[in-house]
Amino acid sequence: MADIWVLCQDQRKDKSTLVRADAITYLSVSDEKLTAARLESNEVVTLVHRDAEGGKPLPEHFNLKLLALISEIRDSAREGDEDLVLMAALDDHGRWAWSVFSVSELCDG
Image 1 (cartoon, rainbow, N blue to C red):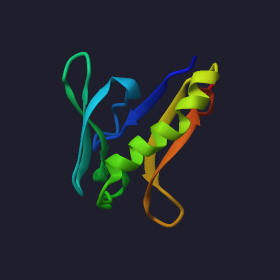
Image 2 (tube, rainbow, N blue to C red):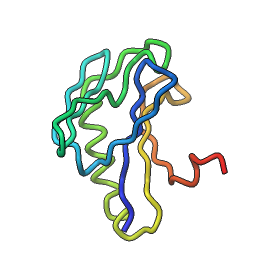
Image 3 (cartoon, rainbow, N blue to C red):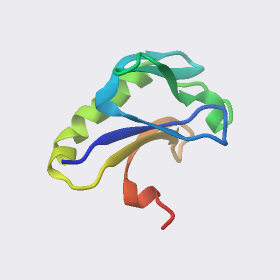
Image 4 (tube, rainbow, N blue to C red):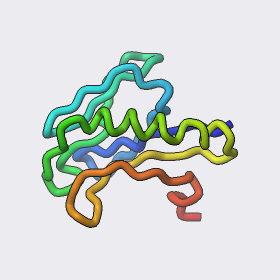
C-alpha cells in the first residue's frame, strides 16, 4: 500500500517538506496561502504560498480541491506500490492546480 504525500511549497525556495495526506487534520486557505495542521503534533505548515509561483493569489476553495484530489486517488494509492506526491503549481493557463506525481517521477536518480 502506497501513501499520499503533499509537497509543501512556501516562499522559501531552499526548503522542501512533505506532509502525509492522512496526517492532515486542518486546512485553511486565503488568497495568500494554504495551511494545514499535522495530526501527530498539531504543527501548522504552509502547503502552498502564492510567492512560490510569482505572487499569483490562490483561488477560493483551493483546500477543497486538494481534498477532492486526495479522495480521487486514494484507491489507486491503496492498490499501488509507489507513494504519490501532490504538488500545487500554475498550469499552462496560469491557474493554480494540483498535480499528482509518483515519487520516482520527482527523484533525480
